[in-house]
Image (cartoon, rainbow, N blue to C red; front, side, top):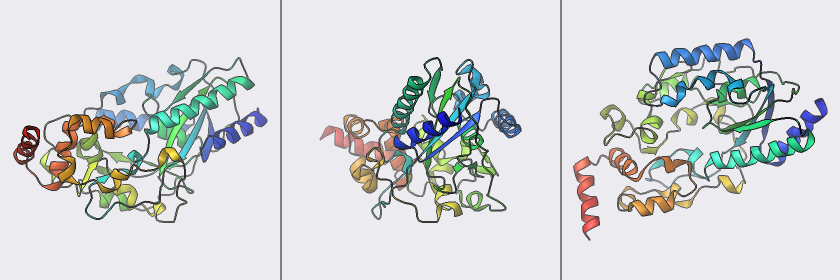
Length: 323
């Protein structure tokens, strides 16, 4: 199986995955500690409205694929050497290109079909972060990187700019060594979060998180503590990653066509975007991971980030609708 595992990794790299590792589905003691940490996080209510985080399959990988023996973790570096125009609103880098769920899922399925062609009696399942899998813990287990204090996976080669996916298989492949944590005494991410969402190392309270509120909060208005701290962010937030020392070295810019930013992401202007109709938003967000943010939420986020009150924004939209 060593030769098969090596060839599998080569195939994964040909599909664009720069990081590939394998973990035994039995898991290590550290994985059990990560699972216990999830239980504490849920018990504290840190998941906010994300009820799907409590899916019991997240704590039992065999529930996703009966007979699973190995977990192949892959990483797609998404750093692109591009900058936002001065004064533009801010959108998290992971959302700049095509929907990473579709991109990674399609490539993982191609990898699974290749594996099936080599060993026809082996079953497999592709998983992206929309699957109820403890994905960052499994990526850590497979050696892709370690979970940082901001809860993102950090790779020595790619920093935390790494989108991850997993291929579960019933084949028993040789496992790689788990990653060794290297955050040390650094607390930069905790200190940089404007809302104090990283309440302690490795613990993010979604109820205080800008990324959660701009993407998942379905309310008509954002909480004032969030709205007052957006610092221009209207779709996700990269602050804890931007300040991370592991992200300060120069990275090679991805040339992957699926990860290149749509030009308007880099020059998003409040005045113009508030005038877009629902149909405009639908068209612009086609095949985007940020399609999860509905048009009314985009307008809410933009008004909050620019200091426009709900009444002023709503009036502007009514005027535009009447014209």
